[in-house]
Amino acid sequence: MSKQDKEQRHKARMQRKKEIVDKHIAGADIERGIIVVLKGNGKGKSSSAFGMVARALGHEQKVGVVQFIKGKWKTGEERLLGDHENIRFETMGTGFTWNTQDRSADIEAAENTWVHVEQMLADPQRDLVVLDEITYMYQYGYLPLEKLVDALKQRPSHQNVVITGRTCPKEVEEIADTITEMGDIKHAFRAGVKAQRGVDW
Image 1 (tube, helix red, strand yellow):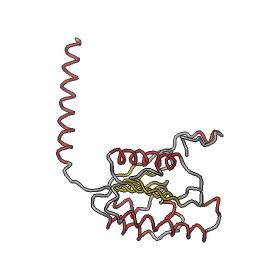
Image 2 (cartoon, rainbow, N blue to C red):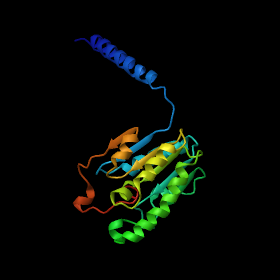
Image 3 (cartoon, helix red, strand yellow):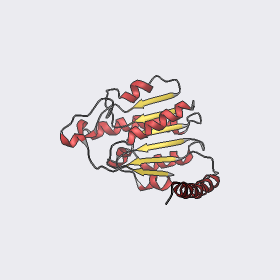
């Protein structure tokens, strides 16, 4: 096959692909906020969520972030974004539940943190709300799931929400628009490598 034939075949394939893509774009004409669930045992759920935070801030949108299962230390994302005028950052601040080993205290902390979630999901000025690692609260039975589902359904119509955690309740998945599951193929920690500043926190 000559170089010219290859070029023509390539052009024909790309034209067909463009027609398909253009048809999908034309058919996606609904404008509303979406719920994105990032779950799975693989690394990168929170990192992906904060990529969306950066995009939203780049478009001068207002963002709310609530982090569960985080300790009193400041993560890199909070150090960078915590004082940004368009972001509200709230952290539960008790650390991993397997470290606290105090169910009553964890439930109280979760309930106190939930107040911020309710406020953000009801705030029409918040274009994006990230609920980082909130799904653990339902895995351990710290918060009533129906409150989250109701708040998600009743949020402002333009508001986007990102939910992260290893697992996700089916009731949340049923109302989610996009679900991505990240697989765990290999992780440095299991080879004895410490969590890295700038990579893991």
